[in-house]
Length: 431
View 1 (tube, rainbow, N blue to C red):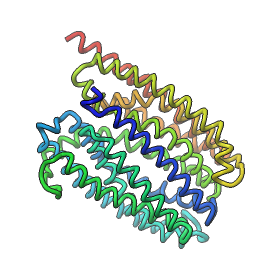
View 2 (view 1 turned 30 degrees about the horizontal axis):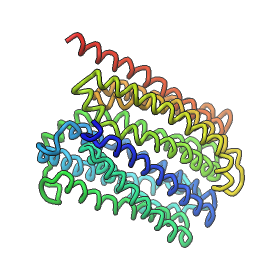
View 3 (view 1 turned 180 degrees about the vertical axis):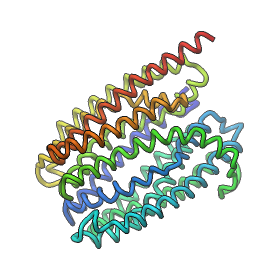
View 4 (view 1 turned 120 degrees about the horizontal axis):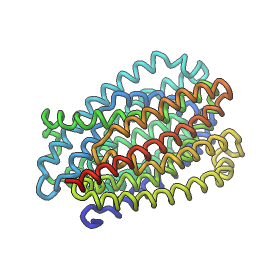
């Protein structure tokens, strides 16, 4: 199975990719703090949080492409694979291009009330660069999902590693000269290069047709929408969790507290994502097993669950224990707000990630009801509990609410989707 799907290679390179990304974020924010202040990190965090809200209109082409082409043969069905890829690429560019433009115009009109007069000019200069970067970032995600779908996810991870190295170089060159604007330009350069190189790599991997995406098909688009719109409710809700938590923090704390929260969230989430990257790299394999052998799917699920539980437990303990040292190195001194946010978010992601294997199961089986319900429920709990705790205890209360919401979402999806796996097995045995 490993040879056929490149499973171990995909997982190994994916984890390396996210590990490099952790180093990138550390260097980027450390330079911004050194040459400007923690408030500049807070401004960047707030603008990116509001900008991320355009994901509400994301049509989910990356997930749809991965879902449909992962069951196709690259050797015998390259033409149909290309049609799915071309359709998804064209649709994603059109939808996200429009969303980015609308998001920019709305945020630009309300910018002064969001950030205040002190940093207004800097924020106004950041906006267009940031939204163009968001567009290219979405294209990168679709291309990497396409490579994962043809079981060459390690190529996508190579792209990510290369892009991160490019961004590190750009950050080192630009941030000392233009501050947080340099971070925005570095990300734009990174994602634009990954988009171009990724497209060429994907074309060579598929080995069918020319360079332009001329395989767009309305019939395939309708087929993909049937899955993507259901899946995207869960994906969008999950994607809104981080920006909504940052917006809540901004309601009860200034840019400095916002900066501490941004650093804490990145400390935990990037470490957690380095682990989950390996899990999601195995999604095409689980999809195949669900369709071909439910018994092997259960065995694969149990093994994955055991590994992910061990890994996340070890890593979150290390994150909590080492966070005071990270504070000293990253910020220059120990900050209680940063440490408290790390503890709350780490405990939340600890429990939440134990449910990530079950979330994967819903994607692989194409049964999105539980994923949608758990994701929406987690976001509702965050907003409700976050506002309540924020009014009572300020930004620290929001941090506690973030941790509790993550725990709730992880437990809920694990209970619901493990029941789903049992039902699938019972169904296949009775036939």
